[in-house]
Length: 391
Ligand SMILES: [Fe+2]
Image (cartoon, rainbow, N blue to C red; front, top):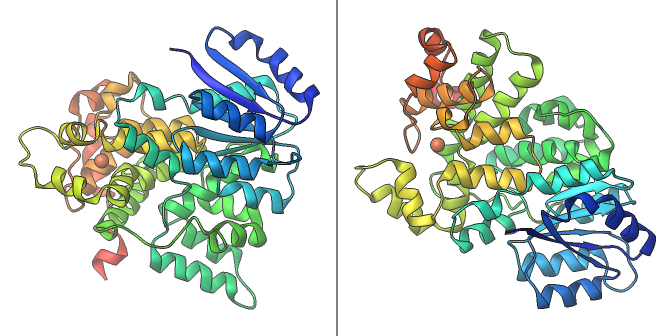
């Protein structure tokens, strides 16, 4: 089935340019072009779309108002902003309602790539309520204690960017948010950054304040069991980074391994946040099959799939998505060389044998296939429990 994409811009020339440059996608996408927010709203009432790409400043209904309606009424639609206005105020307005932010002018390849990365939605058999819940989520809620530490530091007379960066890097929600923003073309940085600390340093104090402290979509409330999930994520990210270093991966892959480890179980957080009683049912089930099978029976999708889905919608890099999507069964990824995925898988197995809310079992055939099975002992020896556990 072809994907249905709605493009909205008040400038006819921009729409014509998009129509021309996206001609090669005609067989894959059904494309609709609207010249105002009102016209787009009428299209949205008449037909189903998978993705909306809209300008921000338009006379009448502007991009923020349009996306606010889409988020409320059809949260399953992926919302992308394509704007010529990249001032801080515009960015802040868009972050609460859009999944991704692109700056004009954008080339066709970048736009096609951004839309394609969100393509996991319709391939998943997840129940519609799960896809809607994931699509409606602008960010993962920060851990209250870490959010408090960041807010206190940012509110002090002389806030230290390095200190803020170190705290943000320990929190899955805040880390995902800063990495998402720094990689969006809004900031015109063409390098891929997956280190949350580096992202905070690049964004600067003012933007971080706007993103984290004044964002009403990041309520610092967390679902039950989140403390242990957070600790397991932090320990997994930290160990995955150590394993990547031990194996001599480059800085980018080491950063990818940490971020993917920190976020690897974020699908469970989404389940706990939106469907707590269903997650209780998964946990109560006698483990005759695997955790993932129980999740698929109840949600239509497992937590690695739901986690990768939301991170893809947010536009995070594909290496991170892959490591999250296959952290339980890396052999299913089709990859045959060692990289962040194997590091995250092994770290998750080592950490979850000590604590956490579900086990990851070592995929021995995969470790053999990437030629690292005999390294497992060294990786286990590199594990240090997070200080919160030992304190
Ligand atoms: Fe998991």
